Image (tube, rainbow, N blue to C red):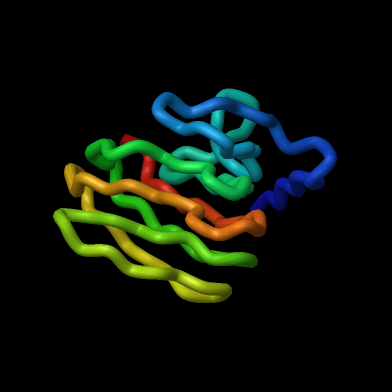
Length: 113
């Protein structure tokens, strides 16, 4: 059994396609880690930040840590607040938007596709 620790100061920043005003870092998963079945990222959304409407390429869970984000999927809008979560199946078309004047942070847990 092995434990792999990622310190937030060492988390790998990346820029996902279709995201603006979003600063994500990989906590687990990606090329530099042995995680094989999923990835875990921390995403910070500035006011007005968004992930454009796009299909999910893998099963994904979002957990809001701070602030407030609007999740839009298949024409339905939900406002998520701290410790609320949303699950999306592969292929679900979704959009994420920060419509507030404060930053928001969320944990993103995604199965590897």
